[in-house]
Length: 134
Image (cartoon, rainbow, N blue to C red; front, side, top):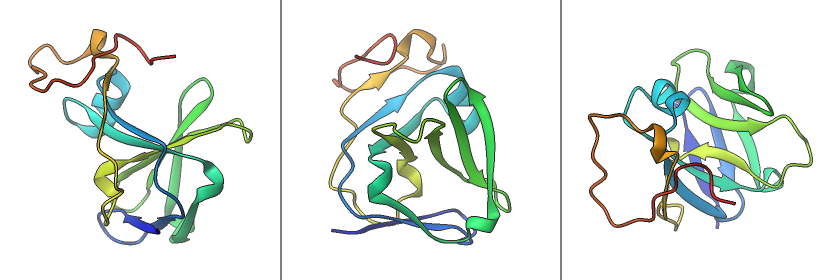
């Protein structure tokens, strides 16, 4: 099963060779700023199961926090991934909104709800975690 993804301008494309390992909604202030919304929906995938298929020269990176940088299209600005700086990391995080195909997995939890936007109410029954669950 290959799942395709892309940025808004279609200049950057990527492919998942396997289904994501997990998915969720992040409410941390960085994800809110990066998405321009109340939350950012993401999926975790092993880096070995991910590959850029077009537009790597368009990728821009921002070191947002210790151990991670955010990857986005330098032309259209689409948020694409949160990539670990450790090459041995088990997962990288792709933004679900950039997928062109069904990943076969839906978000299963809300994380960092302790810093969620005060004007946003979570209206589903998914588990809520104050931080990133262990």
